[in-house]
Length: 109
Image (cartoon, rainbow, N blue to C red; front, side):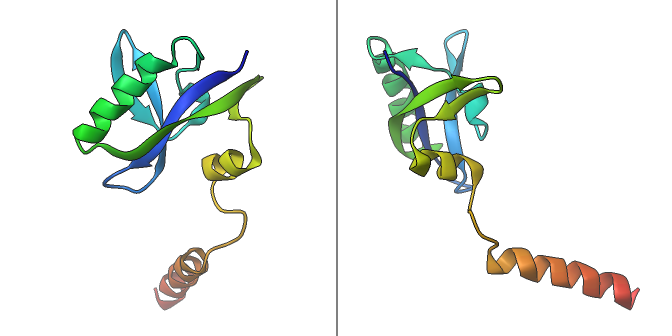
């Protein structure tokens, strides 16, 4: 039986987020390992919480993904979601630009 977590994008930050339920209260984390995982029979409870967060403009585009248990917590079952969870697989231009500006600032000082 597959376990699932709900994922979405945080509206303000644009970051990937995963739904956590603690004592029935939902919150979103950027760490998939901390997400609340449920089976197919109880995934509806996560869907309701995710849709409420979407209506409150906290997140956008929530959906369920399959996860696997690992030594470090939950990991996405598909390569697409693994990449989404861990970030880009290449250096982005803005990453290099910030490194250069930090170095330039140190040299100027």
